[in-house]
Length: 319
Ligand code: TXA
Ligand code: MG
Image (tube, rainbow, N blue to C red; front, side):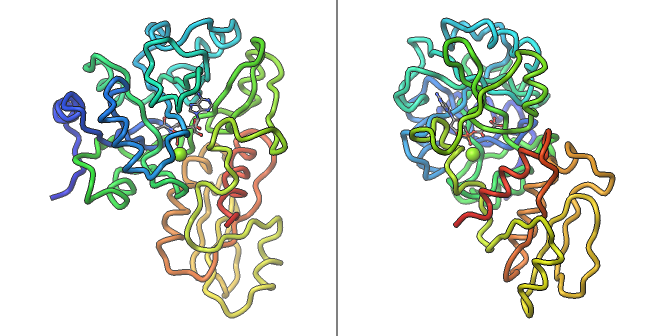
């Protein structure tokens, strides 16, 4: 019997028993558990094979309960919460003393967001606690954007995937931290940096040279297909350089006519970056499941969500 179900009462029962389940959000599916249950949180880390120092995002039902999670909230954080919650923005704030170390990897900060998906919001409204949820994929692999992706990863070990359809955004939330009240980008995501800057002014970028990755989502190899993947400004040229192979191609807008292509994914025929972002992981999943020798991904325009897509593609090409 499939573990996929749309029963919110069943989800509530399992979570109240300190079990973990997969939940839909507008970005990607998450592996969720009660933030106050060490049993649930430990199972999340174990199931994901994720190192304990890599902290989880706390999902709350509305900004009204933020004071239970975080303290000393910078003014610009409050402005961002007001502008973008519910939505694909995670804020890293000083943690409230009651937030367990297990959730924050021992840090004195906590990552928190209000997801924008009717199913998870309905669920959160029936729970007496927030949900900690990393993306519902084994550490380092492609994030899931459908219930089936999650079931393929965790069929044997997970009691339930709460089905909410295909994720509308399709890429993880954008993560913003603060230094002296000023915003810093920890992870590019579904909310374009330009949109954030329109609300709070310039956002500092963290580069790879900065000490140890603040958000391990910034680890260079992440979101990776098992198939060898190349990122190319000119896909046709790259195709010529690898003859006699079964090649998969991922492009933004325009299909490439070439008899050497075994499978092609066009992310948005109309050239819409939001649509392309929403299709990216599903397309990578399909390509990765097609027994190809390699995948060539086209470099995206370097603005807005194109930047986020390029960020994920770069990580997908690192082995
Ligand atoms: O869209 C999303 O954010 C999805 C959905 C399920 O909400 N969740 C997600 O979680 O992407 P995860 O665990 O795959 O990524 C969370 C990222 C990690 O890179 C983690 O290191 C970072 O958030 N993070 C969590 N707490 C942090 C903290 N206190 N300081 C810095 N980074 C933190
Ligand atoms: Mg993840």
